[in-house]
Length: 176
Image (cartoon, rainbow, N blue to C red; front, side):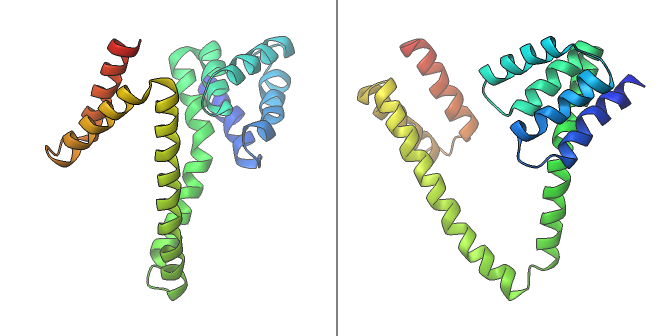
């Protein structure tokens, strides 16, 4: 029964809340503090403070923490699943709709506009990461990691996960 309560406590705010984490936090508080009484208002505020201090979406961090406090690891998994399932369902619905109408001229035009936008966003991300690397690790380490990664990916066709793991290992040993 506790798993169902956890699921509902996080699913309902995420399905009716619009505007991301800051918009649904009061809805989650109403469930966790007001409806189920799993935490006091002070404990919820501390959880919110901890969640704001860590990277990644606030709602999933809070769901994981509250779920763990209420029902252990299983509770954390249920609460996080309930938090992400509304977005997952909407995304699957949108993909199904686009796939069903993939031959439509409007959908084709939309796809033609989306691809260059995504390419530009990825290029901006690469430039941003490169600048951060130059500022943090310095030009020598940044160019070395970039060059070795390019050779590993393009010449040796190494899987990107191994390239990232190698770059992380190098950064951990040489820069840490």
